[in-house]
Length: 88
Image (cartoon, rainbow, N blue to C red; front, top):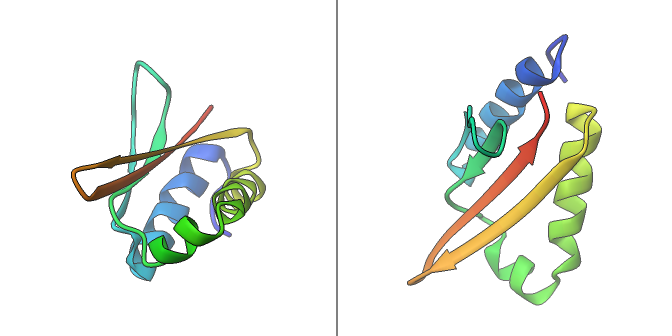
């Protein structure tokens, strides 16, 4: 884990997840706070079969970032997005 604060750790985590195939990016947001947005999940078939994996991902993000995380998954017309919102 790299970074002295939440924002730095979020950028690092987004880069790691992007390298793992999640098409992740760390975005600032004035409305909901900063977020890590993932536009693909290489484990989507597992998420569909075992929904607990989504909660485990959220727990992982909370442990790495050191703050509370809210996970929101969106599926529209076959497209998948997952946003992880947190306080910086």
